[in-house]
Amino acid sequence: MLKNKAIIISTIILGVALTATGCGNKGNVDETKVKASESFVNIIKENKKEIGFHAELSHWGLKLPTGEKFEWTKDTSANEIDFAMVVPADQFTKAGVDVTKIDSK
Image 1: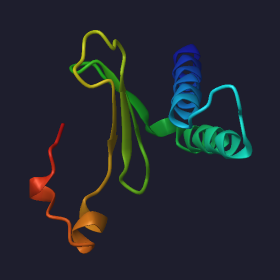
Image 2: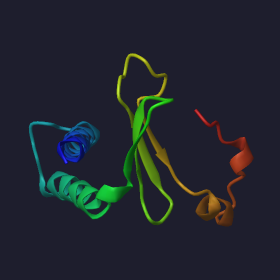
Image 3: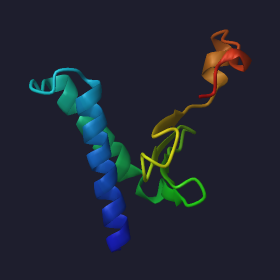
């Protein structure tokens, strides 16, 4: 139980940090930033059972029911990629994107 709480708290902190850094001026928390952070927290709450740890690559992951995955490293100095979002390609291919030409890194 304590491990699950630590995972959830770490994920929430990560979400808030990503939201704050990705939304521009950190000194001015506007309604959009607050809603983005609240949305991320709600995603975590609704999908707690889908949070896992991949020991071989030393990263955490959250898989959503719609197929998207969010992955983040346990140790940023040990991995080449610290954060990744994995999305199904079908929407992009339907829009005409040649996914074979997309750099995977």
